[in-house]
Each structure stands twice: as C-alpha cells, then as structure tokens.
Image (cartoon, rainbow over all chains, first blue to last red; front, side):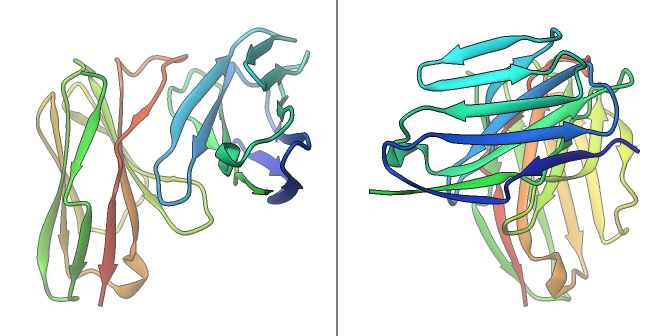
Length: 111
Length: 114
C-alpha cells in the first residue's frame, strides 16, 4: 500500500530560525495536503498542492510539490512561538479520496 | 457554518460501559470519517461514510460501531472497550468523497478507558 514518510519527527528551533519538514511517498501522488495540529488541538487544513513542481506561499510558510509528485516540503521562515505544533503531510493517489498521513513533524520553538 | 462539532469533549468509561460519540456538520458535506489518534501519532482512519453509506471499514474491532443517521450526523457507539482504546477520536467531513477535497476535522473526543 501507499506509504508517506515524513522527517524529521521532532525539530527544536530558537525563535527566528527557519524550519523545514519533508515528505516522501512510495508512489506518485495525485495531490498532497498539509495540516497543522496545535498541542491539545485537532488537525487544521493548511494547503493542498496538485501540480508537479508547484510552490505556494502563505505568509512565512512555503509549500513545495516535487516535479515527480513523490515528495513535498513545508518551510517556515523566521519561526515564531505561534508556529508550535505538529505538521502533517497527507498524500492522495490512485483515485482515492482518503489521504495517507505522514507521521508528522513536531516543531518546538524556544523563545 | 464551516465547523464540525463533536460531543462530548472528554469521556471516561469503564470496560463494561456503553457510550456513544457524536459528530455533526452543517456544511452539506456528504463524506464523513472517524479517525483514532494516539499521542504523538498521525490520525488513523477507522470508518468512512459516503452519502450515508458505510464505504470503508479499516478492520476496526466490533466493539466500535459507527452509525450515520442522516447526512449531517455521525455517531460512534462504544461497547466493552479496552484500556488501549484510550485515544483522541476525531470526526472529519469532506464535500463529496472526491479527490482534491479538504477534510475538515472536529475538535475530537478525548477518551479514557479504565
């Protein structure tokens, strides 16, 4: 079955430093979604990438979808304490509408 | 209304109890999902209802029984649970079960089985 690997599992940064999390799929994806889950909260949709090589920005967040549609990344510039949480990628492929979640990257920002 | 609501927020139950988790959305979505999430893990799909019909059951033990009374409501009936079933139970919905749809998650029910 489809597998989505996400690294790193944890990342500690000082406030103001950058942060990146990476996802790799064992199969070609039709699209990939990113979610953020704050501590004690629930996953909240951030963005969806569909096109090969697509890059989308939301303020300090930059999302990329690889040319082969098998990998994706989320980059946060100049982290803030409000960025704390776990970031999940979720890939879809093979005509399914059920996403396969990566294991998530927990971001800890030290003030 | 772009919200998925879940009740109760917290639930403590014994292994012999019967309880139900409830989920509601008024976005007109026709696909609804139950996920189980353990600490530090991603959400794990349990059931999917599409147009009020159970379309996916991810080999979930029979002590979990889903029900979709109508297009806005989703229940999860719990009976004879085990301590290892303690987790955050998340409900989600999406417009119509098509690709490229966003899943909207509810706040979850934190379940503790004693």
